[in-house]
Amino acid sequence: MDLFSRSWAALRAAVAGLPDDAFARPSGCAGWLVRDLVCHLVIDAQDVLITLASPAEAEPTRDAVTYWDLADAPPSGDDPLDALIVRLAAAYEDPRLLRFHLDDVGSAAGRAAGLADPDRRVTTRDEVLTTRDYLGAYVLEWTLHHLDLVAHLPGVAGPPAQGLARTR
Image 1: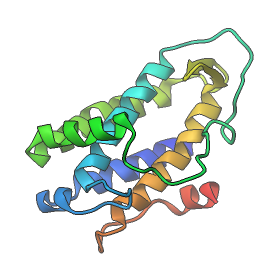
Image 2 (image 1 turned 30 degrees about the vertical axis):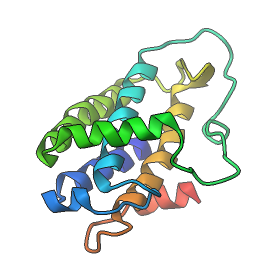
Image 3 (image 1 turned 60 degrees about the vertical axis):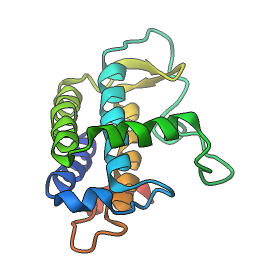
Image 4 (image 1 turned 180 degrees about the vertical axis):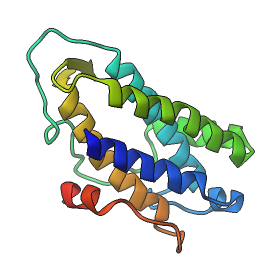
């Protein structure tokens, strides 16, 4: 769970250090600007908070490795949620607001993760995982999105080496 915290803190620090004009640059996510990716991270942080507050009694149905469903093709941009994220990100207008929202919700998600019982079962997406496995799955999410963030931003620090090693 420490790797979750380090990966998440590094990603949030990278976003916090971005100049305003970087938010209008492309990200490594096809069709998304950096602002769209950061908006997605806000939603991810909300998901972490919701999941950590959603205990389950059932046996786990997924673990850190099997949590993510792999797609056969890269995103086409036709997904309604992807389109919503683009519109929501644009509505922020000022990058400082988006940066603040990520810091606010993201910090809360980080604190909640640090307080969570690693063996407690939680539910999300109609699946059950231990908190340890759920947060472990998010090491992959944070690491990949950190790479997406820096894809077209030379000079911005990438993800921690431990997160890259775990993701491989």
